[in-house]
Image (cartoon, rainbow, N blue to C red; front, side, top):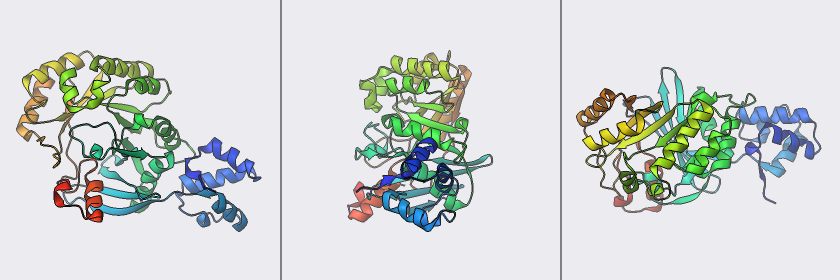
Length: 356
């Protein structure tokens, strides 16, 4: 019999489950605290439970492994990258970034990705599978345990498209912000989407207070289509309407992410078109200089060109920043460490491995 994924049960579900196996309800509270506050990895750690109950749990349930197999620490800034191996042997990445205001963790929501964005290493091998709620949570739990420091901010911008794993993602948000768990404020959680329009509208109605970050990357429908296959399904106008709906229903300002690719989307026409799109919206534009990968010939603009692009937008009244590059001396872009590690394990030739 396949064991049940106990970490994916929310507080109410766990109470019902523990009652169903003949145990008193207060046991659920104890078990939930061990899993989501003390971050236990084995039932034997739960010392305020009887040995008989621990054995009973071990027979029917599992704490699915999220095991660190590679760990990179930047020498240029307080950034660390983690490669985790899952129970089935698949691997995912997470990043820890330390700031003055606290520790921020960027997690993955899927193994691989099927969105096909042209500048992204995560999507090169397609989608393997969705992550479970517990696998998303336990990336954060493992990093918090390894560092001994509280995680205060979470960004769902690693490998995968969270709105393509909608139910598990929404449950993850509720559990991460639950008072019985890590109790991270929803206002300290950001999720990035390439623009799955129906699920943006759906998310708007969930009553959450997370920040939505829309991967824009093109100043027009045509430019977006060249960089992002999802644009063949949803018009830019539809995506922007969905973002407006999110702001209207939640009161949360939307962030627009824009990867600057030299000679592709960093020209005067792009400044003009972005201004037209964003000037009347209560939003923030985050410019990101693209991370080059070997499988694509995209190049990042030099810092002077990026600054000029930012300055022109600011003069047009756009609230815009250039995202500070972190971990530039380690496998910084999403999917790079996973592909590099996989290539080494499978002894693939070097040309299949992403650059630093």
